[in-house]
Length: 355
Image 1 (cartoon, rainbow, N blue to C red):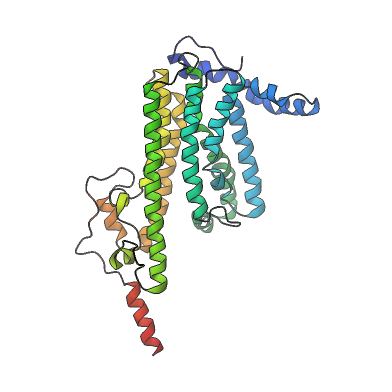
Image 2 (image 1 turned 90 degrees about the vertical axis):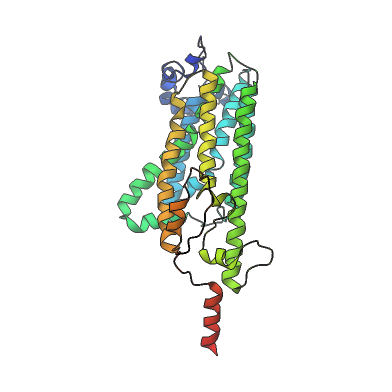
């Protein structure tokens, strides 16, 4: 049987019972796929008879290999970045489809998929409007890292972290759904707790939408201000705020990275959902959420090292406001803040030179 039948809810999260027995299927999967192609067998039957965690993990390895090849051919290392907002939802859709095809209880998995689609819609839209899907676009951080390390070392970094580790991470973010899928054999109906977890996840996505829009509005106003030396009408920002160079209002007044904080919490909540469903304090499915939190720490340090080098006031912002844990009081500019040369002053200076 492609899905284990366990006696208790606690057993549903037991690695030795729900994962380990199916690892041989992973080693056999490439051969079974080749046989299905050569014998013109039904891929649907192969899909149904393969443990969904195994087939999902196998697909993540395939995605990693594909992105590695494309990144080296194009010398563009944002292949996984373009899939980041899609893959976790694809894996959740995979768990839902597999449960439907095998006539298993799927209401709770469908609810998780619903939340995941909302998450994907928000992140994909934000990535698109920032130009992420434009031909040739690449995350600026890869260029910075590439300039600091030897080519051979960066290639190793691409093989390991950029292509494969990130691809596997995106699969592991959805691994708690597998645990909930197994528990659905014992508790098939959606409970009040399921609704509660779903509501929290959707609320966090909503908070990301607000923080994204606040950042977008600020950057648009700053760009126009730098171009014309005039504060855009109705933008809601002062010259001092735009001269600062980074946003410190709205959700950003209480947290330096409110979208990062919500993103980590969303996937941690799915993990907690699996713990609640399996009546366990912790389980193996939390490895994806844990690794994501670690990844955000490193990513935040790199991003903030760049910001602190560009904006004199950023160090003060760091001292007052937490990176991912919101502060109780909003950011306040100190009277001793380093002087920032205004865009309007620079514009006036340029005009004087031309007279």
